[in-house]
Length: 193
Image 1 (tube, rainbow, N blue to C red):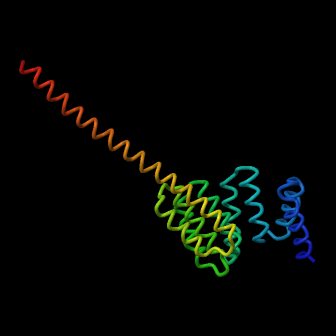
Image 2 (cartoon, rainbow, N blue to C red; image 1 turned 120 degrees about the vertical axis):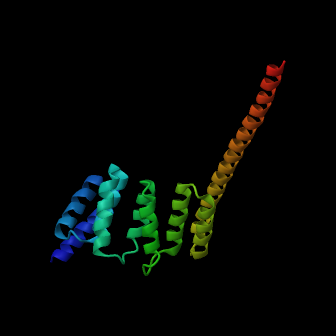
Image 3 (cartoon, helix red, strand yellow; image 1 turned 90 degrees about the vertical axis):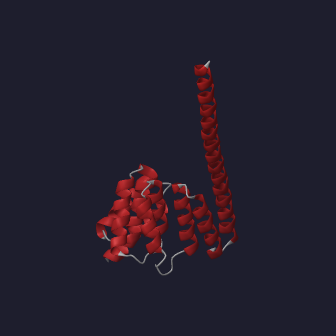
């Protein structure tokens, strides 16, 4: 009986979220009170905490509880990785990506996309392009490939901007050195006169 009631509340929460937040939260709290270890309910609660309340630490706790109960649920990983990247917990995100690659039934294209996003967030644009190209290889639909192409073009623009900025800094430093050398020579000549 509890399992059916629990599922009923979980279905209500899934149906109501995100349009009827009050109903979703009420049903989700009931679902978690009947089964506090239900991975789907914990993940939905983490999603609510992230998207609606901006409480990243509490959302991490819910995701951790979900993974503590079942590591083999592929639906948990993409949202949790996104949370970690947005929260700038890059080391944790990389560890989770590495583990997620070993989970049976995981969306490999989605995980590689998450890897590319992680590298992009860290400013490692060449690695991001490589991971995104890998995501395209695992893709199973054209819409995903099109989306990844858009992400790749954004990463390329960022890389070019970064390279241009590095060149400008380098040229400015060289110019300062040359100007300093000229000023030194002029000062030396003026002192001799």
